Amino acid sequence: MSDLAAEPVLTKAAPAVDHAHVVSIANQKGGVGKTTTAVNLATAMAAAGRQVLILDMDPQGNASTGLGIPRNERGLGTYDVLFNDTQLEDVAIETAIPNLSIVTATVDLSGAEIELVTAERREFRLRDAIRDSRLTYDYVLIDCPPALGLLTLNALVAAHEVLVPLQCEFYALEGLSHLIRTIERVKKAFNPTLDIQGVLLTMFDKRNNLSEMVAADVRSYFGDKVFQTVIPRNVRISEAPSHGKPVLLYDLRCAGSQAYVDLAREVLKRETKRLIA
Image (cartoon, rainbow, N blue to C red):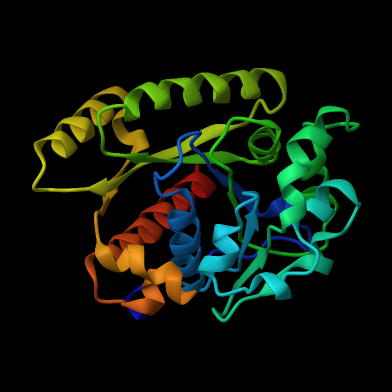
C-alpha cells in the first residue's frame, strides 16, 4: 500500500462530519462485491492518508467481520444511531488499520426495516445523524444491504454520491437499470444533489467472453461514469474475509489488492477534480 502514499492528501475540512464526502456503495443484488469494495477501498484510501469511516448498514454485518471486529465486541452500532439518538462519535470503533474506523452492524439492525416504516423522518435518520456528528473524516463510506428498502434509502438520502459495484454477468444490466431509476427518484424526492460517482465492474474474468461483453455494454451506456479500474475474480479476495482482514493486508501483491489500490487512486483523482471544479 506504500505506493499510495505519494498521492496528495486532501485538505481536511472544518470540524463537522457534514463536510466529509459521503459515498453509498449500493446495488440491490447480493454477491456483487459491495462489502468487499467498501472494506478494501476504505483500506486503500486510509493508506493514502485519508481519514475514513465505514458505516455498516447491512444487517449481516459483513463489513464489520471483514475488518476483524468480533460480534461480541461490537456493542452499539448503526441501529442505535438510527433509533436511539446515539452519536456517531460514541460508537465509531478504530480498526487495526490506521486512519480507518467503522460503525458496526449488530443483530438489532435486522428488524430496522420494519421499525423505520412508522419512524418519524424515516428517510432522513441517517443523514441527520451524520450531520449532527462532531467527528471529522475525509470520507464516509456506507455499505448498503442487498435490497432497495428503507435502510438503503437512508443511505442514499445521506450520501453525496453512489458507487455501484456491478458483477460482470448476464443479468447485471437489468438490476442496474432498476437501481438507476431508484437513484433518480431519491434525487427528485429527497436528495437533489445525489449523483453516481461511478460504476465499478467486479468479478471480471478475462478468460470469459461474457465479462468482456458486459463491460463493453456498461461502458457504452454510462461512458466515463464507469471506472477504468476493473476488479478481477481473485481467490485471495474471497479468502481474506475469513481471516478478518481486507485483501490489501492479507496479500498486497495479489491482483485483487492491486486493483483496489488502483481504484482508490482513481476515486481520489476524481475527487480532486471535483474540488477544483
